[in-house]
Image (tube, rainbow, N blue to C red; front, side, top):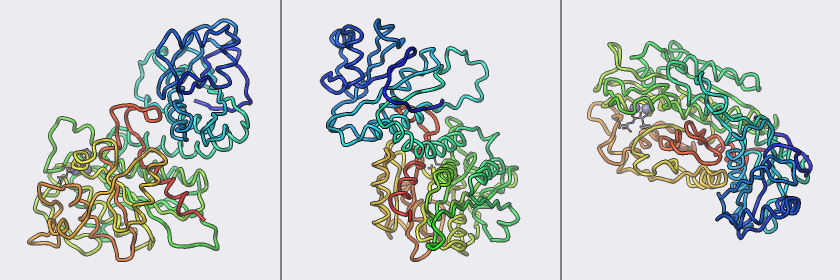
Length: 499
Ligand code: BES
Ligand code: MN
Ligand code: ZN
C-alpha cells in the first residue's frame, strides 16, 4: 500500500473517510459533505447509534451530491483525549473500513481538531502511520486466495492542511514501520524457511542500509568457548549462528560506548529431550521473536539514520531432540567461565543469551544492555498478552523503558529481582542450574541472565513471550507477529540516547 499526502480536497471517486468527535460534532470535511449531500450525514447519524465515540464507524453508500463512492465516518472520541496513539488507531480503523471496498484509491480527510494538542499535520502523519501499520499482511503462502478476499486499495491519499509537514513527519514513521514489518515477516515465517543460517542471511540484508554485519559460525563460537549456546544447538542438523550488527550513527566527535540489544533467536523450540507436548508446539516457530525485534530495530535505526552507536547481537539456534542432543543433567561451560547444570533442556533461551550477552560485553563494553526474549510461559501467566515483563538492575532504565512503552503503545511492567530468587538457581554440582523451582519462573529465568551481566553495565531484560504473537487484532497490529519491541526501543533510543 502506498501513502501520499495532498492539500485538502474532495476526491472524485472512491471511499472517503472523515472524522466526527464525541457528541456527533462534525469536523470540517464532514460538515462540508453534510451540506453537499443535503444533510445525509446528519440523517445517517440520527438513524443509527453512531455519535462519534472512539472506535465507532458509519458508512454512507453512494451518497448523492459528491463524487466519493462512499463516506466513512469515524469516531474520534473527545478532542482533549485525542493524542498521537489515538490518531494512529484512527488511521488503522480507516484502513480497515476501506481496504476491501473494491476501489484501488482511497482518501482520508484530516481536519484540525479543536481542543487536541496535536497539530493538523501531526494528526495526518500519525493517521498515515497507523493505516500503514494496520495494513500489514503475511500472505505469501496463500496461493488460492480469491482476489475479492484481498484488500483492493493500493493507494491512500491523506488530505490535510500543511501536507508537506505531514509528509515529513510520516517519512520518519515509515522507516520505523519498515523495521516493524521486517520483524513481523521474520516472526511469521515457518521454521523450515527461517533457521539459523537463513535468519543470519536476512540480517545480512541490512548491510545495504549501512549496518555492519558479521556472522559467526559454530567453529568460531567453539573457539570463544560458548558452551551454553552450543549445547542447545548440538541436537539439530541446522547449525547455529551468532550475528553481530553495528550501527555507528553518533557523530564522530562523540564516538562513545554503544547501547546494545541482545535477542533470543531459537528458530524452533521443541524443548529438546525435555520435549514439549504436541498441542500448540507450532507456536515455537516464533521463539526467535527477540532476535527478530533486534534485527527490525537495527533496520529502523539505520533507516532513519539515528544519531546513536548501537550494537545488536542475536544468538541463533534450533532446539531439537536427537542422538546428539544435550541431556538433562549435562554440565556446560559458558563463555564467562561459569558452569551450568542443564536440568531441563526446554529452558534453552537463557543458555543462548548467557553466551551472547557475555560476548557482547567482552567485545563492545556497552554502557547499557537490553535483551529481548520469548523466555518463559510464566510471564504469560503473570501479565497475559498486554504487557512485556521488564527486569532490570537499574531504576532509570526502567523508567525510560516504561515511558517509551507508554508513548508508543507497547507497555512493559516491572517485575522483581532479588537474592532470594537468585538462590533458587544454585546447583549442587555446578555454579548454577538452568531452572529454579515451580514458582516465579520468569523471575528465576531473569536471575539466571543477571549472572551474566558485568559490574557497571546497566541491564534490562524484556520477557516478550506474551506479546510477540497475537490472536486478536487491534487497529495498528493485525493478528500474528506483532513486532512488539521495535517501536518501543526505537523510542527509547530517540528519547534518551541520540546526540
Ligand atoms: N520458548 C519457551 C517459552 C515460551 C512458552 C514462549 C510459551 C512463548 C510461549 C521457553 O524456551 C521455555 O520453554 N520455557 C520453559 C521454561 C521451563 C522449562 C523452566 C517454560 O516457560 O515452560
Ligand atoms: Mn524452551
Ligand atoms: Zn524457548
